[in-house]
Image 1 (spheres, rainbow, N blue to C red):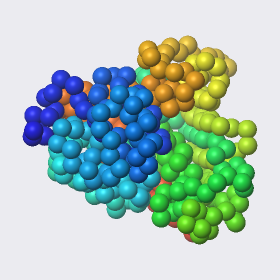
Image 2: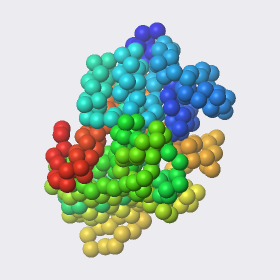
Image 3: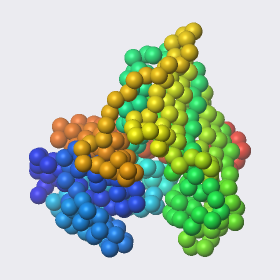
Image 4: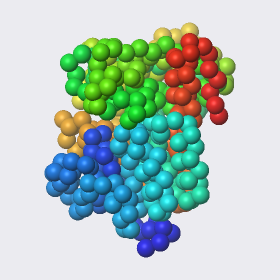
Length: 370
């Protein structure tokens, strides 16, 4: 079946590679009518267990074999970042559409090659910036598009978690620069970069300080952990606004919390989301202030797709945030139109990450490469 014919099928078929965070993509696809036809994980027993649970017919333990499947329309890449580039290029060359988790690549060079290959292949290529799609963030996006902020003066963004808050936490690929590229920046901070780029403007230059919570921590290979656990970033945006970002995966008391505050000439918007903050925490919370008035809550709506377990964090994230991303991607595939967040969005976020890493290393302001 040719790539052109594949896009005309009434029901798209997806393969998911990497079943850690990738598990959330399974219910995310299924909730919007995209068939998950194949799963891939090095631990084949784990993949087979999830295949039985979600009714997925094919299981692979090599990503090369899944990508080669001719009946798949799109590939979801949810592996550690060091594999993103190779898998994406192979999938695009084989005529598949691609959704790649963030950070898009290990560096700006890889990201550029992925963007260029998607253009050559004329395939839809999406970066997994799923936190654009909560009810609260979508409402914030609508308000900013309507001019609710006027000219934005400053932005404050925070993302906190406790994954590596204690020295006893077992080693992980996330601690190894050769596998992850970055630490908390690629894990969490890249989402803040994307939200700010999307709603306010491009980063022009950055200054940063970063640190490791426990310098004697080691990687799975037994080598010293060599990525940041916490970072503070000061950024200047193309609009003239100033942005501050605080990111930590060593913050006791927070399983998952992020916040975006925008202050402008016509008002302010204050968005936050915290796992466990009520039954519908996945909507987020949004407050708005008009000139001369205090912040007041903005009413939000939205529920999980039917059949998903509200106590299963992967199903909640998949249904509330990944499903609308997949829906937008599927629509773009069928209509032959562009979609965001694209690989281009992933590339521009990667440029900011690379600049932040260099700024933290050098202790100087660093220009963000276009």
